[in-house]
Amino acid sequence: MRNECVAHRGWSGRAPENTLAAIQLAIDEPDVGWAEIDVQLSKDDVPVVIHDYKLRRTTNGRGEVRNYTAEELSALDAGSWFSPMYKGEGVPLLSQVLELARGRIKLNIELKTDGRYTKLEDCVVDMIKAYGMEDEVVITSFHAPTLHNAHKLTDGRIRTGLILDGWRNSLPKELEQLGAQFLSIEFGRLNAARVELLKQAGIQVMAWTPNDERSIRKLIMLDPDVMVCTNYPDRWRGAMVAV
Ligand code: G3P
Ligand code: CA
Image 1 (spheres, rainbow, N blue to C red):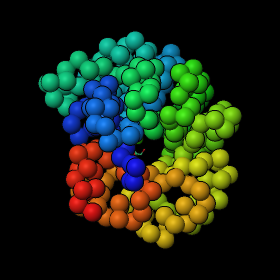
Image 2 (cartoon, helix red, strand yellow):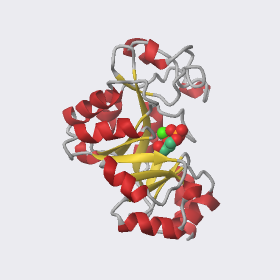
Image 3 (spheres, rainbow, N blue to C red):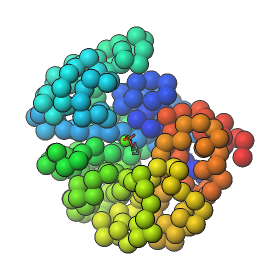
Image 4 (cartoon, rainbow, N blue to C red):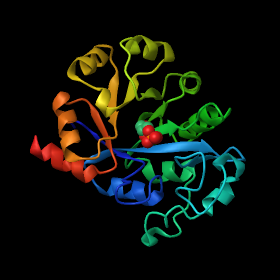
């Protein structure tokens, strides 16, 4: 499909980000092929799905994700901040998300780290392999060393991608050195020439996070192969119809 839609943190415009409910909404929309999620490690080294390093914004917990066990994180309320309707939605384990997504929706798994987790990439790659989902995911990160490690652990069987909010003409070369075939980039950084440069190098491009129809329309007019990562898959659908 042209300009595939990636539901950012699940369908996070409609349900609390990075919860099973938000991912289920994306699954329920047949035109949405992908969901993006953020993964960190619990105190007991279990991959968990949450964006911020601190719990305060999206849960009823306090302090840092890495200081709590997976059991403690699962028991938090990660839904009420968004709407009382979602009270009791927990912080999902990555295993729960893989279980839900397998065969239903592909996953862009962002390793959310600034280098603070030494085992994150090992634990995530092992889990993807255990679920046999190598062809159903891409692993991404802002943190190049973590991404490079992840690539080495995949035996070339899982695609990896760098996340960036800036542009450099040397990107194709840098991505090659990291073993990455995917680029996740802030949407305002793209233009037709840059997309072409990346495509020539065999790189799949995903743009985050245009959330209004006008921005999405501009993006999809650039190139049919650019993936659109948005909190509002309904607005992506509207833009696709309009062009
Ligand atoms: O993966 C792309 C995008 O999600 C990166 O930014 O802050 O939403 O994780 P952030
Ligand atoms: Ca993310």
